[in-house]
Image (tube, rainbow, N blue to C red):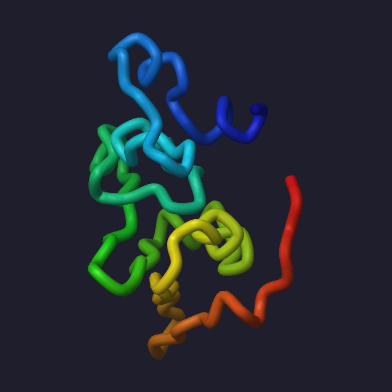
Amino acid sequence: MSMDLDTYDVMGFWKAGEDVDDRGHGTDYYKKPNHPTFSTESQYHGSDGFYGGQWTDSSFIASPTNKYYNSPEEMLWQMKDDPGIKLEYKMGGTIMVDKKKIGSRHR
């Protein structure tokens, strides 16, 4: 739960009466800038210079904010329940990271 409290606005989620999806995940709206998949859908996107990554039908395009707070491995660990979604992590050129190359991680 500590990662949730640090990277997700759990209180805001709870106060709004939100519910989790079938996978037990909450909406992106409450992700904080240090969350591995902080996105443009977050209420914090654009605040204080923090810009979230972009979800597409087949990938998550990491933003400079995502890369500042998280390694590709941390982002992939967070995306483990999103089958078929690739991580697009740009550093100079474009790097598509294959989830299968990252071992399971436990937090």
